[in-house]
Image 1 (spheres, rainbow, N blue to C red):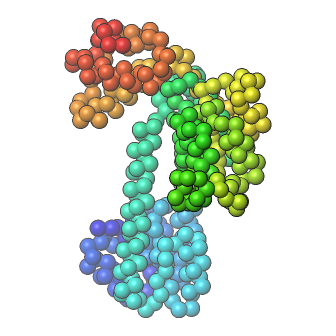
Image 2: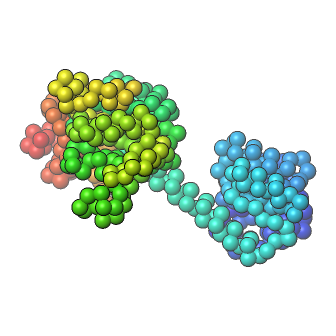
Length: 383
């Protein structure tokens, strides 16, 4: 059942639409003009709005514009008489889902309503999923080093500037990359990750740029590379310090010209991708040793974000442990275990060479091996 608003000045048409919709078990509200309709849109949360074009006080296009300006997410189906078809098409360009022409074809009305409500459901599900993902990848911490990282993300994310994320293994570089994407104008586009250290050097170019059928022995069909798959979104090049020099040269060209060529192909393909890179290596040292291109380094490092190690932000350990205890309890379908202050202090004294990843594993181990409450003795025994 959906909640639907009908904005229509013709009493007869409004009554017919209401009857049809209520037969489908939808909850229906009515408005006799655009001004009244917009007030109801402001006050209530509607899944769909059927809105006439020509009305007194405020026409349908004005209602649509004001709704979009107010950030109201209701889907619109515009009701159009024969003489206002061009206006209805303009409304669709402005963001309306579709338009219906008077007199109504009941078959088209039913299909249009179903499609519009399906879209509303999909948008709601996507928002719910985004909230779950955001919670899963929440950036925990109130220490000065992590606050500085958060501030940098807020400043750089809305731009298209390339970002180089540095930090030791397990410190959370991927999390920073994800938040840069989520807070950017490209958030609705894909976030494609490539772990440059995990791909053999002879395959990295095919992975990044794709290949044409027959370009090498196992290329039995054409394959799109990560640059193309990330179109309109963000490409995250993790551990870029492990990329081969030949692949570095091609990445540099892609950044300079916003064009790529698939392996075995001669066609240039334009790409619209924001590149965020990460490394646990000292790239300046790698440049001195001729293992990394200096020109690529300067292309990638418009903004450099250094992610602090866990040893540099031990005051965040209590917050991180609390999150991990809740996450693990949710995974196991159990009640979160308590941990006492002495145990937290013992964790703060540990040398966290594996950073947050190591802490997460240790907390899970403590949950499994300890009693009802995690104690300092448990920490000494199992860490």
